[in-house]
Length: 608
Image 1 (cartoon, rainbow, N blue to C red):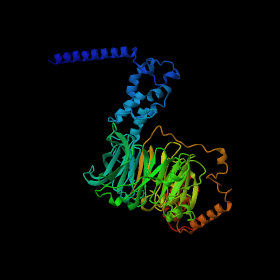
Image 2 (cartoon, one colour):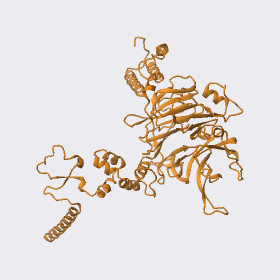
Image 3 (cartoon, rainbow, N blue to C red):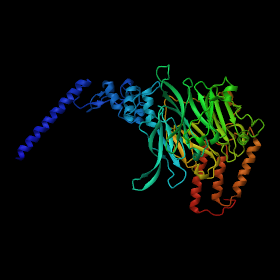
């Protein structure tokens, strides 16, 4: 009985071996490979670079076989199963794998694996690669300022989203716009944790608010409590009227309640007018909507938000803004606004300002000499040394970034929110010398944030100004200079926003959005004060010496060694040093402070 079972098992194993041998022969015939007695070995080096170094065949091993002998479709199919990070790394090994990993067929398979519901590949020179990387790097991260957990968290990722283009947090939720014009509504909700506890979680559920959106905006104040309504600029198909054939696409502005996502108001424009950006300015009862056309003209209309929830019809008048009437030759490319001022950037890099209240005008320019309360829409040009690429507008201060990557700050500096190392107001754009080539810039009520990138492509977040409420993580007392915040920044972070309760960072990488910064000409470098040792000597030999004497007197006035260490850290933040130099001094002072803490803080003598 046992012998019969063993004989049956042996015949079954023989049949399996025969099937495997036949399959191996068919594979060899298909790929054109020959079977070596010792087996097959795939060559690891680049096939176009010749044989491997020391290319003598080792005894007992088969001849190396080039990867080029495999069908290209088979290689692309295998590579498409790798993670995106590994595909990029493999493409950097040699010329052959660079061409294979850069093929659109590979990225088409990767894109459909990442986003199965994506029907179109998008636009651009490399549509499938762009779409795959957009969906691989998309993410919204946030860090709450209060509570026990002060770590970076990630929101829910909508499966239908094709990358993230921009976002806006409101009073209760977050809204995200993707590259196909779909606006998503990310809700905060009560969820059950892994331990069975009910907890309040941010941006954990999502719904589609609308499609065909171009841009959206809400109350421009930094406090999200005032963001009750969401204004969406979208394109809608309008039914054909009498005497015409077919429907027409018209731009419209739809107003939604941010709490529920219910649409409460809609206004449609003529089909001949096409807009690309919307911003808000003014109070609730006199809310002005500024609309930027594709031709660079600005139109405005006024609505009363306090009456939007009433079921009635409104008649609003669309008028050309004064900046486009008085300066018709200007082509505006970007707008920024807060409650009482608006900033315009032209295609030539010029900057024009509208200030509507005397208090903000005094904070921004240090005087009321040119302010006209009867003509608040008159644009005021800023004098700048180069073309401006983008800006950030706070309540009473602003930041500008030019084509060479230089940062200029202007306005109120009561809390050190300009990052100049002091707390003196600036009535004109002032360069922050130790910061260059930022990725994003953000200005709030009384603090500023800069997203920068190091030489190793790692990102870091810098901040200055008021640190109350945890808005500058790691610096509760604030800083008059930009300091490195204790925040883990995502690798592909591209924009940021800060509210009273939370810090948000948007992650998305567009391969067609290349760095636009230029190298500063040598003629402009000469005479520019560079940060570093002795940088202030040629400019102000006495001022730097007096500042150092004042710093020493402040350190000497501290009673304990720990207090002196803390004061020295604060002084390092004030000094006009580069970010790497400040990090070095802060880390060194932390090491000394920890070493001294083992002995125990006690009264220190001048000799110590």
